[in-house]
Length: 224
Image 1 (cartoon, rainbow, N blue to C red):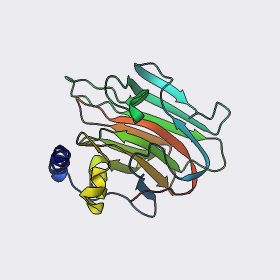
Image 2: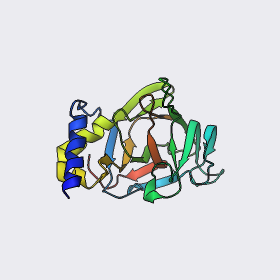
Image 3: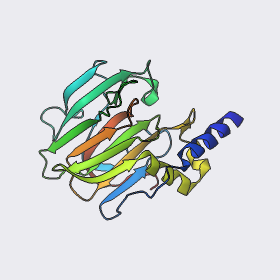
């Protein structure tokens, strides 16, 4: 318990200098952190799919088309670019199994290469939800949403930290593994978006899993 407390306080100290306001416009986007240990969204949907990456080979995929488990005749098509798939034995993943998605990175290069996802739907009900399991969260992790090439919303590790500070250290402790935050984050949109970009600072990588896409009808559990 003492070592967990030390990790907790070390984590809070490390991010203290990064604290800023969460850039959530409540009229446009609602962000919820799902209850601890949940690895998928608890929302209700008209349609939803999930990409777990477990069927992909361990390598860089310059382009990968996903239908999020709904098949080619389903309503969702997502095209990933600059996607790197890593196995559990190298880092970590949901339930410590299978594969997860990250960005290309180099321990020597200072060039930041994000990976991104472009989305389209054939349903009359537009895509208004995106969620993912954010593992081993680190300073400078960020996810940014676009519509027709224009940024509409961004969310960073700093914003997650702010939410935890709002609810206290006891809540944060539930999400800590070896001093790092692991959580499923749900984004509920009231404005259109068609692209998601995942990025980190140079010489490191953002770690994600269980990408969920769909049209929600009722928001799920969690705090915001």
